[in-house]
Every structure is written in structure tokens, then in C-alpha cells.
Amino acid sequence: MQSENLLNKKNIAIIFPAWTNCGTYRVVVGQIAAYAEMGANIYPIAISMTPNATPENKSKWRGFLASAHEIRDICHLGGPPLAPLLSYDYLWNALWPYFHGNHAKIRTWLIEHARLSQEIEAQKFDLIHCNHFFSMPVAKRLAKEKIPILLETHDIQARQFEIMNKLNWCLKPKVTYEQLLVEELAQLKQASALIHLNAEEKSLFESLLPNKKHILLYPSVNKITLSSPGDEIVMIAANNPPNLESICWLLDKVAPKTKNFSVSIYGDADKGMQKFFPELFNKFKSSFKGEIRRLEEAYQNAKAIILPAISGHGLSIKTVEALSTGLPLIATSIAFRGMDFPTQNLQGVFIADTAENFAKALDKNILANTSLDNKITKPQGTVEFYDKTFSPAQYKENLKKIASEFM
Image 1 (tube, rainbow, N blue to C red):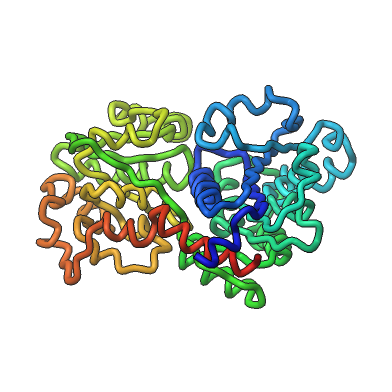
Image 2: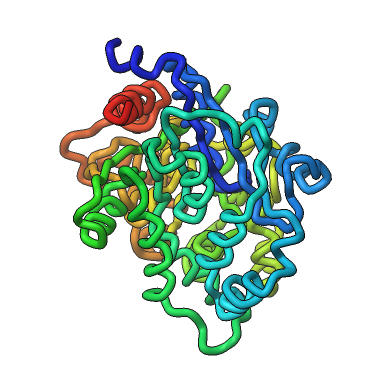
């Protein structure tokens, strides 16, 4: 109670990139809800990297505001005006490096030149909660060199940029992972403390920045409540490189080894598959159900969930959502990356790291009795694990302790 009172009526800025179709957005929604429940005056600030997406230019914000239905009524907006984009500084120090794949430089530059509303510029804050290193220029501007900044890292972004560059065209010489990391670490060093979403991420950043304060904070993930079990085996997949790789593995390696492959893939990954892997997409076109308005809709007819991750870094939000449903899961070990918990002990989870085992689980409905093949010694239910680790109530308690240290 004492720490909660420390946050009561405090002005807290929550800065984040103006994205909605990704895990970052869901983490930010959890942050906003938790701070509000603690009695803080919250100022969510969405920053766009789209040219001329200034607060007053609402035409540039239609897509974001239409998708961000949970927070759009309380969000403040910011983005770069056109004038700085015509400068020599932009052309040489942002756009030219971007042509070589330097996403770190151009994102930081664009956010540094973001125009904010007069209300936000004039507001005095007690704490800044910043999401992603490239949002730091706005955080520093609002902190006015004396307000604490908690920077949530959301994985090592240099790795994500490296993955993006594998699929995108770039001029040579292409920027290296090490060069991207230098840009990232330069911004991280300026925060008061670094918050990490998973144990793997925390360990890596501790080795890179040993003199900074590092905090592990699992994100708040809303529980998926089901009305009744359905008859589909479901996979959730947004259009990003790790998901596309996972789908390719599932369709190319696992499906041929099954007797009757039947999986429903929800999300806009169908767009990426159609563009980059058209033959595989056309062969399994009936499996792709497309994008849905609300995530919960994808689970309503599910009898089981699959998580065939073969790559990726950072905590998988969709894995946590799957745990919260209480449905049986077939997953690779990679799907549980970043969780400081022996996932083989979770009742209702079957770990299958080879295509043969994954196909076996799909064919024989091994999920009905995971103890036969999963060798569970100390079973814990998936919902119980979710409640103790990722529920909004647990997240609020953890965030309260962290934020109170800086008040």
C-alpha cells in the first residue's frame, strides 16, 4: 500500500512507437492500465516515424487510431514534420544510412525531430516510462535532464533489424549487427534504469552494459477466456520474419509427415507468405484464415494451440496468451524462450522440437494425455502459471515496486 501511495497523482509519461499489430502495443496497453490502477496521472504518447505525422495532422493517424481502440481516447500524438526531412542532416545522417539498412539511425533521427503537442511539451512529469531505445530522444526532451527515465528494451533491437535486412533490399556495404548495436547501446546508456521483458534479454544486456541497473519485468498479458472448446487446431501468426519461418517449417517439414494435416492459421501472415513463399501458400491456402479484428475471436473455436517457433528472440506474447487459455499446446522449446521456468513441467504442454515429433502430436492427439510422452514430474497447470507470472494483477504489483524506487 505504501508504494502504491507513492505513485498516486504522480504525472507519468508513457512513450511508445505508434504501432498496434505487434507485441509492443499489447505490452504498452498493460503499462497504461497498471499505472492508471495505481492512481497515477498517465500521459500515453504515441510517436510516429511517418513523415508529417504531426499531432494536428489527423489524416496520418487514421490507421493507428482505428486500431488502438483501447487507448485512442487518452493518447497524445507526435511525429516528424516535413521541414526537417528536406535538410542535409536528414539526407546524410538518416536517409543515407537507412539505404544501407541502418534502421537504428533513421528511427532515432525521426523521433528526435518529432513534434509534440503544446500540452505535452509544457507538462511537468515525475517519471518517464519509455519503450524502445529509439524513443529516447523524446524521453530525454520531456525529462529535462532531471526526471528518471525507465527504458523498456523489448529485446535487442539490433537483432530484429538484422532479420529485417535479410528480407529487405539494401545498398552495399550493408550495415552490420555490431554497428546497429553501437547505436542502440548509446541510447540505452542515457536511461536511469533498463527494464527487460524476459530472462534471456536481461542476461544479454547485463553483459553489454554492466554498469547500468537492469530489472526483469515480465509483461502484462490479458487472459484469453473461452466460451467452450471448439474443433480447430489454431496458430496465431502476424506478418513478420520469425512467424513466416515458423509457418514454412510447419507446412514444408511437419505437414508432409502427418496423416491428415488440419491447422487454422489466423493473422496477417498470409500476406507475407503469399509474397515471399507463393508456392507453399497456394498449396495450403485453405489453412490461412486471414487477419481478424479481435485476437480473442481466433481462439473461440480452438481445441488446441500450436506454437511451431523455430526462430525469434525475446518473450513470445502469443505463447503467454496460449497459456492463459488453458487449452492443450504443442510447441517447440523456442516458443518458451525467455521464461525462467522449466516449461516441460507445465501440464497440458507437449514440447516437440523435431518435425517428426510435431507431426506425431498432431496425428495422435497426444495432447489428450501429455504425461505419457512428456515425462511431467511436477505438473503445474498453464493457467496457474499464467496467473502467477503474467496476469495484469501480478504485473501491477511488480511495476509498482520498480516505479516506486524512482519516486
